[in-house]
Image 1 (tube, one colour):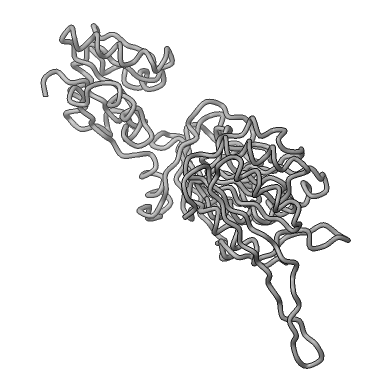
Image 2 (spheres, rainbow, N blue to C red):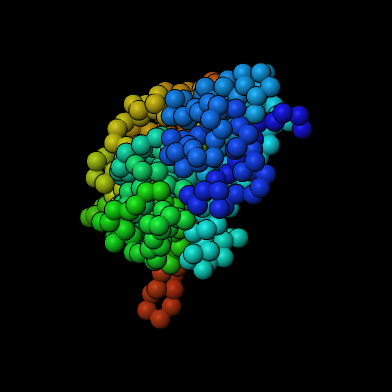
Length: 428
């Protein structure tokens, strides 16, 4: 490779942790780019004619600096921490520049060092990063727009997480987020501080509550280890698993109807779902468990049911679900276009909502509605026909066994019509 830009992984032990090739490249560099802290660490190795560029001046300027220097036949070195291709600057540069004009000289990742210090194998770990702009503290109202949401979802769905932090998105903030999300007793948190420096410190197996109250030296990396696994089924939860409104207990979509409705929604792992008329949240919360990489947006007009749905979300430690108080179609304009929509209630705006939902749903997505009255069933099918939608109706009437003396009888549940529709085409 003629005159490449070298992307070199470095650590806080300086030249002691570098190969001869890496040291030689740094000493011959005409242009050296890196964070101020890294430039200071290696400054004694630079040629007296070498120009230095601080990454703090702007990441977007970096490709231009490199292109200009290479055009002038200069030797260019970019200093990155650890392995530049693991949540580092390497991928960014190779995407911006011709990959054939770059050569990566990786170092040991700080995550590798952290696992080695802790004596843990790490082949099963998932890696994520909070090394972004200050995301602020997590709150129950936060969702996918929050910078720490990907970290939360990684923790929600994996037993061993290796995490790059930042001074703002620190280990204590991560711990507080997990506590707020209902995972307080599910993880221990270990921190490797200031690796390969005189101040190196390894803090093992803190509870999340302990970690939330501490402060940690920067830089650091975090290892999260799950202690309690969720063995509950993803699908078909018993009605008794959900908090329900009292004294009017039972105001949820019953398990048999819920199971068929969820099946008709044709959910995928990353589906965006709308739940309109959420009630106690049973359908939306089960949908969120079936779509761990997706998100469920729910709306409910009854404030008591909103509170109950939030209780159920907390109880189940579901992190990809949000219920808002309001009456559809209010709020829906701010939601992303869905892959699937469920109606548990229409709030008297049924025809208008059907029109709106079919205009917003993604191609191939399903609108599934539950009705218990003939009038709403007739109104829904009429509007669907007017819109030239493809639709079908399933009548479902389940009976459940009930004890009577030393025997059992069957007790019928109310019949429910499940209407499934798509915009155009044929229902499959």
